[in-house]
Image (cartoon, rainbow, N blue to C red; front, side, top):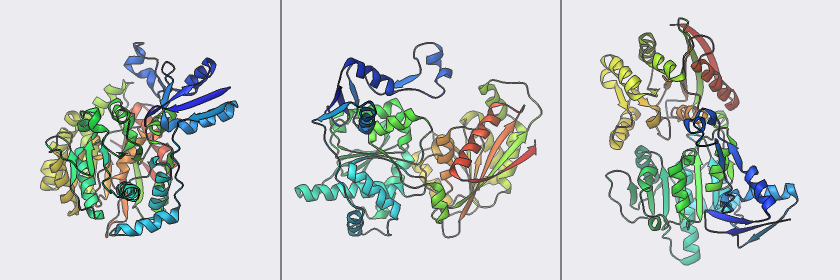
Length: 479
């Protein structure tokens, strides 16, 4: 029994095998989406809730899933033939990478795990790099661009290497460009988002929303593509961008967190390449690279409530005056800079802002989806220079990627069970500074009847904290 793989382009390969093997591969690469049974499309029978990574009609599959096909054939004792499939392995040594890194004239010496990440990435020319907040992902991305610039110069004498970096928000476009400048990059950077002028440059940083509108031929002008915050690339629009970039050989995803589902990881590996854990948050804390984290789980005991739907429970909590007063008083009592994260802008963010503003006045900064990118960057700069500021922000704007060294406290004003959102949000406070070595998280949960949604979500978060090796304390408070 034989399985033959043939490269179609830089995104897909096609499998040639017997029909019985096609069925086996179809089942092998089929996964139920977690929580799918609660989704309207499944409940209305428009979709069965499964993601299938092998197309049984076209026999196509993502190039990045080659290691899984290799393992599948090995387990089933099938002969594997890779006709025309490019072997991307280059087997770069860590010593070679270290010597090359010295030529970059960086303002500081890269950490060992960053150099190891580069070595593993360029040895395959594709890689999904999982590295937590404050571990220096932007430097890894910068070094990837410089490596392929160096590689092209050696091969052709031309160092014009075009790299596209896709980020989720306008704030991250500006932040990434600023980081590159700090590393010594002195060439123009094309920044693509609403209102920005497009021009030809070796480095382009774009939001996925803006880049999704680009024509296919324009998408394929790049040598390297990097998907920052790659965990978001399971979204249909983001996947579509990577699939249209059929001629782009060098592909990398960087993220701080993956969720616990196998389908999520396999989708990302299919698009970017094999998974690599660069370093853990616990390891960074132990070596003093990031701030020590202390978690205080605050369980607010409400008068007993009858069972509610999830949305009814959320509406009850965000409109609860005593709960909102508790949050305001908590923030007022904290020393240092505080980041308060909420979920619903109109229902909760506006309410908290109106309660906090008369107390905190000019110390309060309000950020949500409608806040302009330059205003967000200005807030970031102001807080960096402050010692007692408060940022009241929606999860969508400040839970991912934003780099603020001077965050001393984080308050989860809205409950969430998402592993990615929680760990990304915690990451906002992990960066250290000259006078900051620890951060405190105040994780607010609500006991309405002993087994309501937000209490169950707290249990999920505690499981995450335990798995990550974080220290936490539980405090019960009568509301």
